[in-house]
Length: 441
Ligand code: SF4
Image (cartoon, rainbow, N blue to C red; front, side):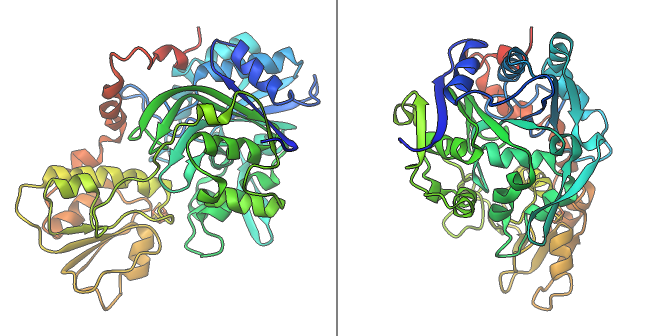
């Protein structure tokens, strides 16, 4: 890797110095000063205050957030905002971001460095063209900044293969725009939409936080690893190409990076990238991204191994938005818990915006508004059971499955707040998964 786009790659060793070294290896912030308005975008993804919050490999460490703020202050930057628009199942929830910012120690960062915190959903959005005829609504504070400092986590993603700097920008758009990103349009598909996210934004400096990484991310049901690596660049695409390499993927394996490279007229073999610092080959550690399904794709592998029969729940596709996707995990858990050993009566579940029914099923559950609108009147479905919410509500889902003969516990569907805690138990007692990275002292 000897090209013209510079990427800094350092091992994480200690507070402040490692982030400062990553920024320096990338060639520094560029021209910044007292008049520069910086918007920092960490990756907080989702939040719950009902249990231990999702952390290792899921959200940006507070360690990196504080160290980036300190580096920016050292460089004389005048205005710093830290903002995120985390996924919330209840759009009326006004305290989620405040809870997250408090628990992650951001209030201490505010006091210590005079930064401002931004809950993206409490601020206006502005429609902005990302391509001819394609508009998304972005947070105004990010749009009106002079520099965005993008702090993704080093992770894979079940739909987009990797979730790094470019994908992290999805947290700056409003909910209708997010749903639009998961479009069934074969041209403006999820990957092309994600690739277009940086186009309307100010210059972006990316620092990929790889102190912890996430395999089968982006959320807490993946597997976290301690990776100890920071990747930084003034060029977001180059940072992501190197990040993908570290996770075991070539650019050609990641559709949104291919689209972004094609748009920029750049090669996909990393030949125009110059890595300064560590060797990417030495730090590479392949991470899987997808969840395994059985041979005919009718059930997740783990459920098929339980012997579950009589329900056909096809693998999610790219049109399934984050909101339905979140419910999907809970629905699958509720089905697994409802299994008593007697096969159900030939039930199919359709999700996302593009699925079509399999022929001859006795009961077809149309999960979400998109499937309801698409198939409610489909004459090839013997017994359609619509769950029209966007995303569907737990009570509606439980009723629909009951109608199809699957009696599930609605409490499981409402357990999203305690759900992360179950997955995080596996890291208990392992000193490499240190809580201190998510605190500011
Ligand atoms: S129903 Fe689900 S897939 Fe359709 S727009 Fe709503 S959240 Fe997205």
